[in-house]
Image 1: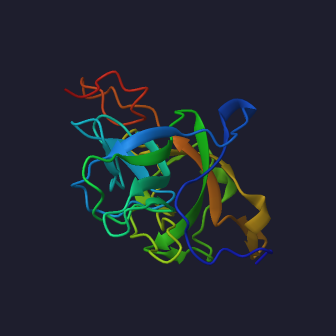
Image 2: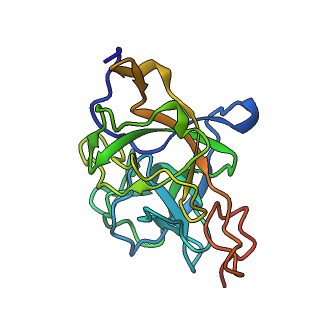
Length: 221
């Protein structure tokens, strides 16, 4: 395998935007409800729920009905244990000082491109002849909703090799491959990392479903 090798998935890593637009690290502040105790990791997809706050999106072969809100990039809160402002790579679902706001940083641009690892299942990076080939560009693909790493704070979500298809419900579109970590088996080049974007909402069922929340006209009540 070429250097560097890919040892584990790391979630959805923002790189640039479609059309060659530059990503300069812009994020939007989104609140997390103080009662929300589920971990959200750096690189996890998130969704907006009825009270306007965000939660971790666990979708794999589709998207939340109202669409993804972006990808989680960190959080700040006032810990109830220390009474101090805390900046964290991931939301650990801890108690906060009453009346304070939990602020998540979300890469919310609907044109965002992400680098992501291809796994055969779970967190197993696909380094065999079933990994993505160049022909995967343009296909839609499913996520693998792995639990994150509480040591690093990083997501472990990945994309599922073997799921690529012309299926409008799948949440991501492969727009490119990553040549730096490509490997060759029997003269065929395979790619354990790809570049993806949010798929468009599905309008085929009459009611818009999925895609990015900003491109989905449905919204929520």
